View 1 (cartoon, one colour):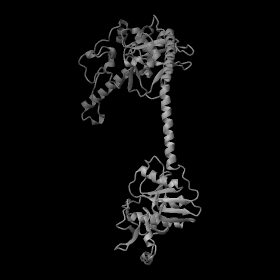
View 2 (cartoon, helix red, strand yellow):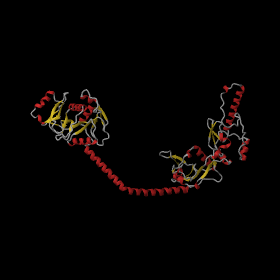
View 3 (tube, rainbow, N blue to C red):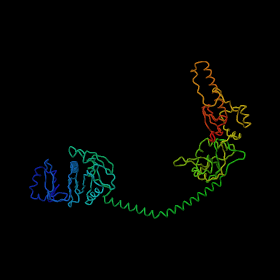
View 4 (cartoon, rainbow, N blue to C red):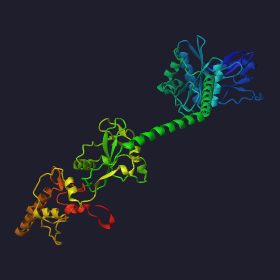
Length: 520
């Protein structure tokens, strides 16, 4: 681009004959370049390329960068698209009269509205984008950037059309083919052809909602200033808020301590002189407490010894106490004591960790874990323990209805009357013996027997095992499952299948185990 006394010349649009005749104009010596305004001349390369250049003697401080073929093609495509829009005209390399800016393609509407399309295929900093955009905005020109990639990290929002067409992209057959490329408007996230994007920007309804770069920077500064003021005010208020929080915490602590004192004062150790702890294979402590809302009495329990200095004791909550077999033992003790005291409910608390708490069975008031922790040892009583030395306690535990109620054998009745262990069994018991306890080879199908003696032995083993299972199912110490092949020991709560009594035979499950491992 060059000018002669205000007349604009585009070297790419001048035909060969007028281009050669340009030097014959009387004012040819007034030919000036757009960017710098210094004297220039027309040049034709060996390949026929027409362009303007400085005379060698002209000292120009501006670095005139040569444009790539991709850059030229995009400018030509934009210019043609703008000229095809109603009321719009496009010109390339339109410069400010004082060279403040030079638009790649200037789109001018008949109403006077102007848009500067800048094709930026090379790297450029955010600051340079902002500076060049603001120069257009100062002259009431809307900048539109046509770039190959999205710059979503820019803080200042600028009108951009992302084309994916860069300096190394293949050239189209004709520049107009570029209008068929799929483009994107980053701020709206819409995708369309580049030609449709250009038409949308040229449409009278198009508006830029984010303001000029200077307006955006002023807004950022205002927000940063307000944030700094809020932080300074918060810093000044911090001591007062901290003191208010401390006073509120102290008041809350006093209220919490008063509630704990009320809870502890109303608690008593449950117990009856004529009822001892029932045998359960485990030790269970219980306490009679009252809810703080209505004062309803209830029984709470725990499996860990009260007053133990461990992490769990500092904030206690029900854990295994929620299991049905533990709660059944609490019911057994209440039945043995003839007490009408209600049993506390166990309620799941909101939040993570499957936290639980005791609740009042009447008003559903939650019994806080720290209240339970605050109960002294004197407020707890042992209602179940791992001992079978007392026959009266054993009878309490076995009150649950068995599957059948057979008459005990004479040796068993005599053993119970004398409160001694049953007669010890012989040391050598064969597999086929009904009294055999322990692992045994499973009987194979009768059809696999090869001889009459082998078949008779297998039939005898089968009958012996059936008799053994019948004896186990009729034993009042065992609670059978519906299918009849799984049993639960009422002494310790242990479960075994078929005739594998193991340590449950003859109540050995509640005897001292080997290697001082505690109760079995």
